[in-house]
Length: 259
Image (cartoon, rainbow, N blue to C red; front, side, top):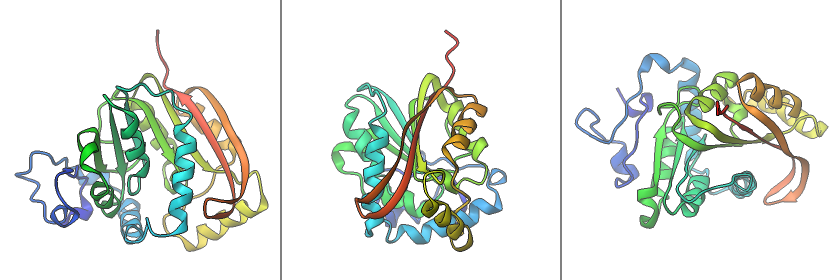
């Protein structure tokens, strides 16, 4: 069975060509997820994003993604020894940025696409390899134990999650008590353009589920058990970083701390 159907932790000392031929039963640095937890919709999503991975970094959309990632990362109060997870990491630009800020910590990225994870691994410079890890995994089946991370980032990917509340609960599970989530998404409540774009993508893009209004996203965070959910940004962007027009929202929340 091919790697497209496995959740694999790619060793950063291997090239994308090597990644495609891993023999995981003998490989010590490989994590294989149970196939019973990968749903048919996830497999379709993998195929879609594997195709997109080939040109993901080449278009104007990459510039926009990196701008919004920077905006979201700015909501973190990072300590140099923090552990940070990027859910839906794509080709890893936010993970690279986070690792550069964590002189004693580590940045992790998960993505459902093996193609995205392979490109992310290939993008890592030698100086950061010991502070970065990428894993191919679904957002509602995160392959880490509970209370692992100080922060979790999720930008421009929540609208792809078919089981959004399960994904948020998984994120809360892997956060340490008091750990922080920052999530950036489109905001259809701000403009007819974003509402129309949401409708169009539902018809034309296999991986698109829906955009959530700011009220809906805040309620989902609270329903998933996050405390102190707060809307940090809600605004329209015009002619910004390769985008003609966009409506964005940024939320933050915290895993409950019993202290």
